[in-house]
Amino acid sequence: MTARQTWRRPGLMALCAGVGLSLSLAGCGGGGDDAKPQAAPSAASSAPSVSASPPDPDAADKTAVLASYTSMWVEQMKAYRVASPDGTKLDDYATLDALSMFERDLATMKKNNTRVTGGVGHDAEVAELDMEAQIPTATVEDCIDLSKWKAERTTGEPIPLPTAQPLRYIATATVERWDNNRWMVTAYKPDGNQTC
Image (cartoon, rainbow, N blue to C red; front, top):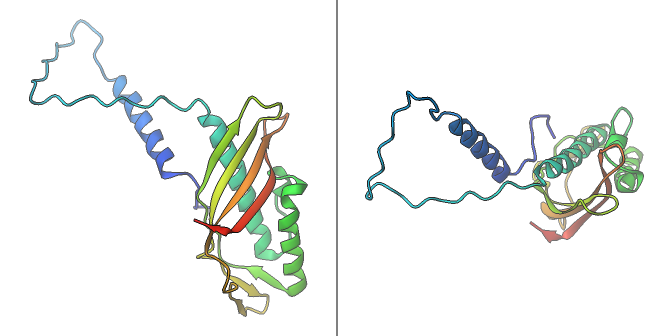
């Protein structure tokens, strides 16, 4: 995983660009007495208006959820590169329960003298968000992409993925907003049987 990779959905980026453009265009109209009246469009050139969908009131929370999930993975890949969580900020983004699987992976990697040199692709989205719960909770669904995953022994010998391993599969994470308004990944479950 490189620092340049992002996990934003293309639709969200297009929505943000469209909102920014519409706001900048809205400020361009003349409001003074010098403004010239605009000619009414002819019937031949007028097109039916397209109604814009209302903005998502949970957009900021969804963005924060995905930022925390993404940051967890950035830190996790740092750990996988050296087979150790030392020097990472995993605790800033995930709880012990969520990290237990990753920590088992790291222990196995360290025992077998292996490390990861490739990356993991993601296509994550907030599938559910409950801001009314006592502890606001989100469910993130992610399409994990192992097409650039590379593992090797510390001697440099490559380790191929198992032949039964799908290159793309679904993983689900539970993310909760804690008292300090930080979103924390509290559970992570990959499902290798559900491809994407």
